[in-house]
Length: 286
Image (cartoon, rainbow, N blue to C red; front, top):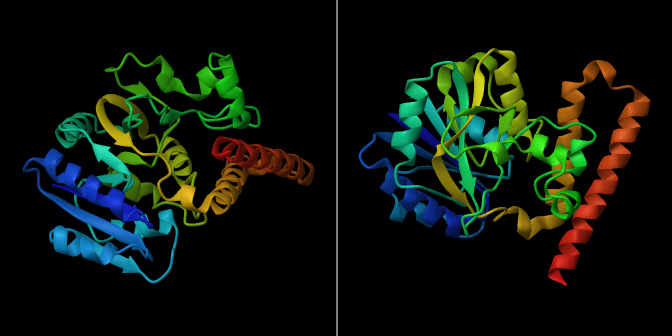
C-alpha cells in the first residue's frame, strides 16, 4: 500500500486529469490519496463528488508546498509515498514499476522518474546541486537555450546522459514527482517549511544524501508534467519565490562560507537572473 500526496493551488482542472491517471495506473494497488489544497478558488470542493476515495484537506490559506506536504505526510503510514504535482499525468504502469524498484533497492531514499513535457520532450527533472555558475545554465535559461551542449548545462542536467532505462545516482530530482521511502524520510525529517515554493525538493535530496540514502533517477517510470500550471498565473510572485528559495538553499549548503560580501554578490546575481527571467516571459507573450 502507498500514500499519494498532491498539493493543489488553483489547478483543479489539471487535478481532475491527474487523479484519473492515478486511478488508472494503480490498477488495484491499495493507496491512500491525499489532496492538500492551498485555499484554491476554482471549485476544488467538487473533487470529493467525482473522487469520493480522495482525502481532501482544504487549508484556509496558501501555506506553501512544503508545509502542505508535511501536513499530508503525518496522515499516512504506508512504507512508500509518492509526491505528485496536480499538473501531472502518470503513465500506465507507473506505480507497479516504481514500487518494484523501491522494494528491491532499500538504500534508495528518493526516486525520481523520467518527466516529460506534454509533447513527449524530456523535461530534465534530474539535476546537480547549483553553484554560482550553474545558476545561469538551468534547464530553461537563455544561456542553455543558446548553447544547449555546453559543458555546464550537461553537468547540471545529468539525465541528458541517460540511456533511458538504467537507474542513475543524481544530486536531486524534481518534486513534481518523487517516490519516497518513508523510513528514510522520517529519519531526516519533513520538507523544510522555510521554502514556501521551489527548491525544497533539492534541499530534501541533499539531506537524504547526507544521511547516506541514495537519490536515483529511474527513467523506466515516467510521468507527463504540464509545467507551471499554477505559477504562470502569478508570474511575478513565482519568480520572486524561486529566487528567494535559491538563496536559502545556497545559504544552507554553504553556511561556513556565507560572508556578507558573498551574500551580497549572490543576491545581486539572483536579482539580475530574475530580471532576465521576467524579461524572457514578457518577450514570449509579446
